[in-house]
Length: 204
Image (cartoon, rainbow, N blue to C red):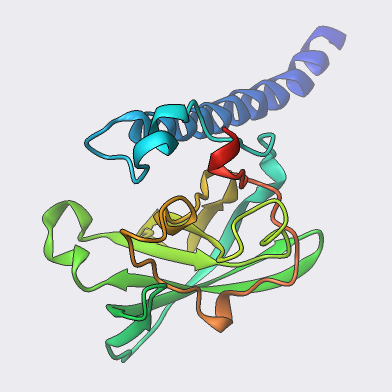
């Protein structure tokens, strides 16, 4: 009898461990692919010695605390708008929905957008864009904030894994790129210690 009770207790823990391992592997895959992109001369935003000296991105330690399940609410009757960029130009976006989540017991809401240029391409038709700022910006992360790529969820929940957040190209090359500026509504008054950290590329 004791053996069955022990098995009853262990199986859920094993399932949880396997799920967590899968999530960690997904983050490691993201990190590997991001490093590969920046090391690829055809894809990297880095130029000259910055590219030559680049080895890999610095990342915060993977922390599942920053992988949150958020309540998703699709926005209705939204209109296209021009989102300002770092170069002074604009890019066309449309609000798609809002995601509400808890971190350390406090609720936060961010707005998710669709790029009107990207959704014209079939591979990006379900792509969502989350630009955000948090209390690490200007210290451990890029002052202009970070981005996260998402897909349209099937139901009313969406997973936000901040471990897979990255910095815009402008953090590394402000001359060749115009990056969307994070809207005021997505400025979070909390530290999100996950994803890519900022390091002066001159010091790689």
